[in-house]
Image 1 (cartoon, rainbow, N blue to C red):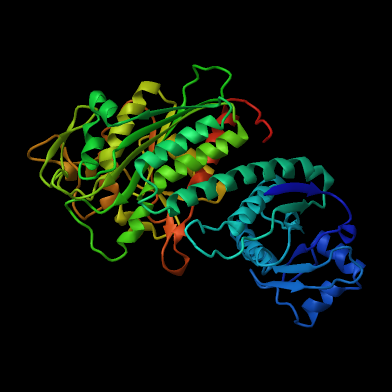
Image 2 (tube, rainbow, N blue to C red):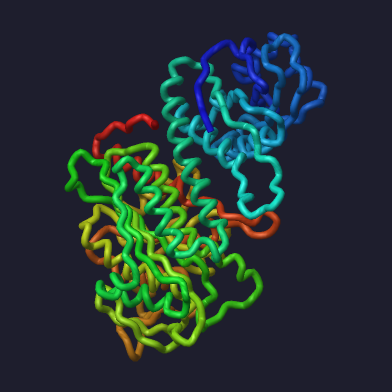
Length: 507
């Protein structure tokens, strides 16, 4: 999708549809006020007579707008002015673009830069607008024999009342476009069925990203033979029961002026299907276990965003990928495995497999002497019980890193919540037979899972994002969300700013 910025008289904008936000109270916003004057108070009269309810998220299409160059006018409700905030704008955007996507329109002009959001500048509003547009036109129809027609909407112009905000809006739209593309890529990987999206398929996706990066991304794939030689027995143990070979996928982005600049490492859990192994899951909703690689999908999506934005920093993206299946070779409860770090693990439940692939990837990351490491995983159902489907669970061994991620989540509106990682919980992982067990019982399940991972992160600042509640939706709207691509991309862009660099324009 293409985005541009306009600073012209809104009454003279020639477009298939001009989108105007309005409050239930107070004066009209600048663009709406000019359109109201040019159309003999069309907007004001609709509100005064009750023909349009400007409640938050309400949308109304006006097919003919006298006095305006636009063919159509769409009004979008913002609710009351006093309650307008980030969530209000996101709600309005998420009502607007799905409505536009249903119409036979190739291009539209929107005036959301007028919306007064406390402490948010023009670039932020442009960014979230671009992201919302791309989310709305996303469709997953690869396996439909007769798919519904795809939305035609392909160009969105952002109408900016203050010309001094044009440059910031352009930059925000660039970031939003890149993040939106990364989110939709992650959604597609997550939505693919397990018989298509295998560890080998993810490896091939990485190679394609590398080939299309003009040398910006170096890709290395470690197959099972290489993993065996490496000593990554924990990762390999998860895939023992599957005919699909496991893979460790490494993507290196060198963007810093100093090639020796310590990289930031992202690690994604890539369990392309999780039956639970010998500790077999119940059959209900097991189809959703194709989403157990959404941590990996978010890493791929973030890499795609980085390749578009080209920030001047170094990033290493690692995906630990396997399929967890039961057969005669599968790891059994009670088995003891040796990790890449050298610690031994008693596997009490083979359905706690994500931490077994991640711990070897976390050890592998040590070789890069990283500035930070963030792993992303659909790790525990306990995270859903604790936080529901709104916030990602955040655990960290470094408070500064945790704060940086929380700030990035607020900026990207892809929020996380800081959970405890106290030593008090570590004893729940004690084993009579090995260095540690892979589960710590029912109490504080998401915390003990993070405690397990923390045993492998002693040499660098590390954070763990448990996205079990935020990576996908169930029910009629079943599908991957693409989270937390926005958070991760913003976190990396913030690190670039810390280095004192200036982002390059998107190509």
